[in-house]
Amino acid sequence: VIKKNLELIILGLILIFAGLLYCFKLNNVPSGVYVDEAVAAYDSYSLVNTGADHFGQKFPIAFRFFGAYTPGLFVYINTLPLKIFGLNNFSIRFVSVISSLVQLIFLYLITKFFTKDKLKHSRLLTIFLISFIPWVVFNSRLGYEVTLAQTLITVAVYFLLSSIKNPKFLLISSLFFSLSVYTAHTQKILAPLIIIFSFFLLKIWRYPKKIVLFSFLILLITQIPNFYLVTTNSFWVKTSSINKNYSSLLSDINYQLFQTISPKTWFNQSPDIDIQHQIPEISLFYSWMFLPILIGFIKVFFQKKKSIEIKFIIGFLLISLVPGILSGRFMSTQRLISLLIPFSIFLFLGIDQIIKFIKNKLILILLFVSLIFYSLVMLWRSYFILLPNLYASNWNYGADQATQYIQSNPDKHFVIDNTRNPRQYILFLYYLKYNPQKFHQEIGDYWSKDYYQNTKYISNISFSNLEFKPISDDDFKNINNIIIGDDLTINNSDIDNKGLKIINEIKFPNQKPAYIFYQKK
Amino acid sequence: MNFIDSFIKLNEMETVHQIERMHAYPSRFYRLANILEKRPEFIFVHKIENSFFNFFDTSRFSYKPNNLLFLIFFIFLLLIFNKIFRDQKKS
Picture 1 (cartoon, each protein chain N blue to C red):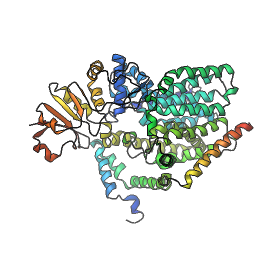
Picture 2 (picture 1 turned 90 degrees about the vertical axis):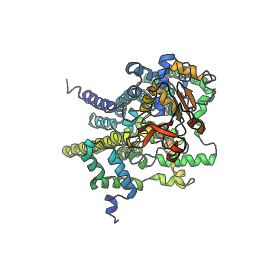
Picture 3 (picture 1 turned 135 degrees about the vertical axis):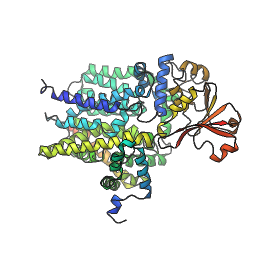
Picture 4 (picture 1 turned 60 degrees about the vertical axis):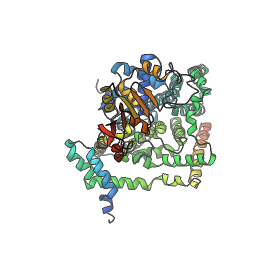
């Protein structure tokens, strides 16, 4: 029985390993919560308690967040772990953990289309390697929509490729493509392009007419909410990042293109503009993976007789570049996340070639065991040691301790300096688990009126005993005010001049101040 | 610094980063931190990796907006698409 099901058993063990890795210290690493995580989590919390997001909009199709109008599927799915585990860092990242595991299963299934060999060693080894690639580990532990969206695209691609042999799978594929559009902005560009490309490549018009018609109907019906959104400002907010000036646009595309095709980006140093998309001292893949991925890439591109699956993956690779290339002046690796599918195929083909090339089993085992050991040590060093320490400020370390202090002083009035982080009110809503109904009453109905047309978002705001705004001199005069800021809020020399004293200080792991609490003497 | 030294010795800025990284390790991992951050073998591997990928770094070309490579790459993309559909037509 074991021999018969060996493939399944090994795949199960890989998934258990990956699951443990993705859940290990999930509450504390990264060492805080990024505002994009906090806003998705608090909106899910608000939905569970009031049926509306934190602006008071009942069951939104897209969530305003900080003006991005992110498609809402992730926030809705996030309500399930939130109900089970409560509002905490673990529960808000749990959907991504599960998504990553599902993604691994479907990547494994997709590799089947690219080999005729019955041997499963290279496929299992590839999936094992993919399970702890820095890019995958990082995204599997994020509390927002990118990983779920990528998983839905992976599932859709698997069923699309399956439809070549059994056209019925086109129905499932179109459903998953459609769902992916409700998860993240990137998929709004990606999914239609893949559908159009596949329509011509797979000659879908030759599929049984009933299946084509029903697949089209699935797409059409499930996209009705988006047809409504197209007529509103909210649908177009993300296109504002695309440069309208032709020569600047060309320059942006040129910059993005050369950054994206550079091996340095993928194997050495991520140029992502957002520090909270990065892991210190490591890039998206391990540096040694450059070789197998290059071998796989060459095998795909220079194969004389290309199978339809290979042609699909080439097209998919080129289409996946589009959302990243249109990202404006700054590179965002999260908009290129769908490249994980072609890269996994290249890695698989490269590993397969290496296994076939090195005939000596002992050398092969020694080679991969040492590479796996080296990679896991590098992952542990970069992700579990350096990330929570060196990037603590980017992950808003200390906000939870600041809210604990606020909770223990309910009679005080706190003024929080938001000059350098205008979106930080959401961190305090999240950590305080602030009653969403009360919050709706305090901010009034301005924010829920014309929800999809009024694309403004909150930065300066008051609720409970908290006020978020840039600090002015008047704030120092009130003896009941406690000012919360950082080391740039007030000059050290000004503390005495303004008659202030420091009553509490929360420090980053490197002992630099995260939050300083000032009060009038 | 001679050529070999440049691969195992750190400059002033790199030393500052090395100290920052050393401080990030919990005290129970002190020995491991010394191996991963201070051993010349590890410094050598990282420096070789950096030099290798810097050599192949195409983003160096991105600062010349209208360069020829940009055009060549797009022609390459067009050729690939063209080939895919030509093959498809034949089959």
